[in-house]
Image (cartoon, rainbow over all chains, first blue to last red):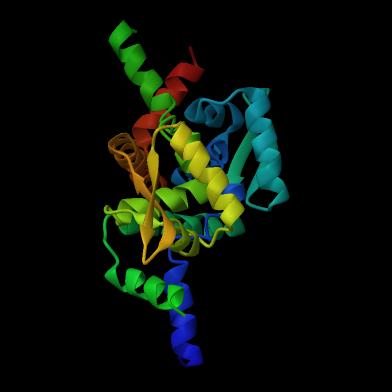
Length: 129
Length: 129
């Protein structure tokens, strides 16, 4: 077996590993937050985001901190009608990583509906080595 | 505001909550296992499944136990060429719940690419109540 066909088989063999499902994004509440922000490119008020994701103040704060540390979201404070407002939006990096993540989700949906004969062949070949 | 329009707004307001992302299925390794099994309706040998998901023996065992407890997978033992084989497959319930889960994933992908004006209106209406 040549190096290149071996590498190709390895790719096929771990076809369902989905290393691209970054845990920072994949966690349900954070996926919810990022999808809300992706759908609202101009950003969202903290309170609107909380309602869209059905999260409590404490939960949303905690997940926003994880996402800020990762550099995926930014938070700004301002006044609106004399009341302080916290405004949340995706960063360029957050948008890029979220789009990459979505690509993997789409792959999961595609993989679930096919019967990859080539994969099974590759597994058998490696298993019999 | 009538009761029915209030309920409708509530649905819109928590549009990004994704309660259907069952944590038993959503965890990355288990999503990997379930997708492999969904793509192989006749089931997979434990060792092939391990390779397809790039998991260790211990990890796959642990996640299979969680999935068995939930009733989503079944495991059977048999002999093949005089060697014991562990065979894994989805149950009917596991298949049903996985398909439901996929529907939510597809919704995430759709939501990420739209700008739901109706949702923003609903949020503003509730926020100003």
